[in-house]
Image (cartoon, rainbow, N blue to C red; front, top):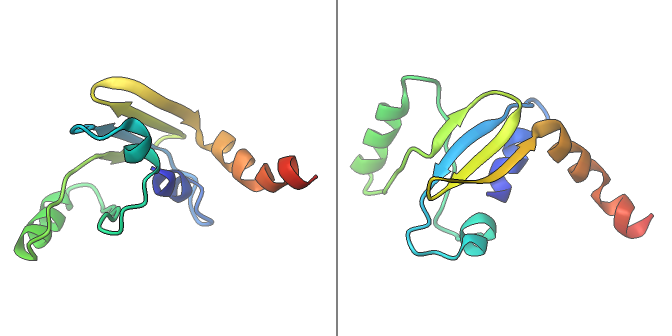
Length: 104
Protein backbone atom coordinates (compact mmCIF):
# COMPACT_ATOMS: atom_id res chain seq x y z
CA UNK A 1 0.00 0.00 0.00
CA UNK A 2 3.05 2.21 -0.17
CA UNK A 3 2.07 2.84 -3.79
CA UNK A 4 -1.35 4.06 -2.63
CA UNK A 5 0.25 6.45 -0.14
CA UNK A 6 2.50 7.75 -2.92
CA UNK A 7 -0.55 8.28 -5.14
CA UNK A 8 -2.09 10.38 -2.37
CA UNK A 9 0.84 12.80 -2.51
CA UNK A 10 1.45 12.79 -6.26
CA UNK A 11 2.56 16.21 -7.56
CA UNK A 12 -0.77 17.07 -9.16
CA UNK A 13 -2.86 15.51 -6.41
CA UNK A 14 -3.49 15.68 -2.72
CA UNK A 15 -6.36 13.29 -2.41
CA UNK A 16 -7.10 10.73 0.18
CA UNK A 17 -8.42 7.25 -0.29
CA UNK A 18 -10.57 4.82 1.64
CA UNK A 19 -9.68 1.14 1.17
CA UNK A 20 -11.20 -2.05 2.47
CA UNK A 21 -8.69 -4.88 2.09
CA UNK A 22 -9.02 -8.57 2.77
CA UNK A 23 -5.90 -10.34 3.98
CA UNK A 24 -6.88 -13.64 2.38
CA UNK A 25 -4.32 -15.40 4.57
CA UNK A 26 -1.46 -13.00 3.81
CA UNK A 27 0.57 -11.56 6.63
CA UNK A 28 -0.40 -7.89 7.11
CA UNK A 29 3.20 -6.74 6.52
CA UNK A 30 3.39 -8.62 3.23
CA UNK A 31 0.02 -7.28 2.12
CA UNK A 32 0.73 -3.67 3.05
CA UNK A 33 4.41 -3.39 2.10
CA UNK A 34 5.05 -6.18 -0.43
CA UNK A 35 5.99 -5.26 -3.97
CA UNK A 36 4.62 -8.13 -5.99
CA UNK A 37 5.33 -7.75 -9.67
CA UNK A 38 1.83 -8.78 -10.67
CA UNK A 39 -0.19 -6.12 -8.87
CA UNK A 40 -1.21 -2.72 -10.17
CA UNK A 41 -3.45 0.04 -8.87
CA UNK A 42 -5.95 1.56 -11.26
CA UNK A 43 -8.24 4.47 -10.52
CA UNK A 44 -11.12 5.60 -12.67
CA UNK A 45 -13.89 8.12 -12.65
CA UNK A 46 -16.97 7.30 -10.63
CA UNK A 47 -19.25 5.03 -12.60
CA UNK A 48 -16.49 3.64 -14.83
CA UNK A 49 -15.43 0.84 -12.49
CA UNK A 50 -17.58 -1.74 -14.29
CA UNK A 51 -15.93 -0.94 -17.62
CA UNK A 52 -12.48 -1.29 -16.04
CA UNK A 53 -13.40 -4.62 -14.43
CA UNK A 54 -14.95 -5.87 -17.67
CA UNK A 55 -11.78 -4.98 -19.59
CA UNK A 56 -9.68 -6.81 -17.01
CA UNK A 57 -11.86 -9.92 -17.21
CA UNK A 58 -11.71 -9.79 -21.00
CA UNK A 59 -7.89 -9.74 -20.74
CA UNK A 60 -7.89 -12.63 -18.26
CA UNK A 61 -6.85 -10.43 -15.35
CA UNK A 62 -8.41 -10.63 -11.90
CA UNK A 63 -9.59 -7.21 -10.74
CA UNK A 64 -11.04 -6.15 -7.42
CA UNK A 65 -12.53 -2.85 -6.30
CA UNK A 66 -10.64 -1.92 -3.16
CA UNK A 67 -12.14 1.44 -2.28
CA UNK A 68 -12.63 4.99 -3.41
CA UNK A 69 -10.56 8.12 -3.93
CA UNK A 70 -11.48 11.33 -2.12
CA UNK A 71 -11.14 13.27 1.05
CA UNK A 72 -7.95 14.24 2.81
CA UNK A 73 -7.01 10.99 4.59
CA UNK A 74 -5.58 7.58 3.81
CA UNK A 75 -8.09 5.37 5.59
CA UNK A 76 -7.40 1.65 5.33
CA UNK A 77 -9.39 -1.16 6.86
CA UNK A 78 -7.94 -4.68 6.89
CA UNK A 79 -10.36 -7.56 7.28
CA UNK A 80 -13.02 -5.13 8.50
CA UNK A 81 -10.81 -3.56 11.18
CA UNK A 82 -9.20 -0.10 11.10
CA UNK A 83 -5.53 -0.41 10.22
CA UNK A 84 -4.24 2.95 8.94
CA UNK A 85 -5.78 6.38 9.24
CA UNK A 86 -3.43 9.23 8.29
CA UNK A 87 -3.92 12.73 6.97
CA UNK A 88 -2.52 13.14 3.45
CA UNK A 89 -0.69 16.24 4.72
CA UNK A 90 1.07 14.09 7.34
CA UNK A 91 2.11 11.56 4.69
CA UNK A 92 3.48 14.37 2.53
CA UNK A 93 5.44 15.89 5.43
CA UNK A 94 7.05 12.56 6.36
CA UNK A 95 7.88 11.81 2.71
CA UNK A 96 9.38 15.27 2.10
CA UNK A 97 11.44 15.25 5.30
CA UNK A 98 12.35 11.58 5.60
CA UNK A 99 16.01 11.93 4.64
CA UNK A 100 16.49 14.93 6.93
CA UNK A 101 15.78 12.73 9.94
CA UNK A 102 18.42 10.21 8.85
CA UNK A 103 21.09 12.46 7.33
CA UNK A 104 20.42 15.82 8.91
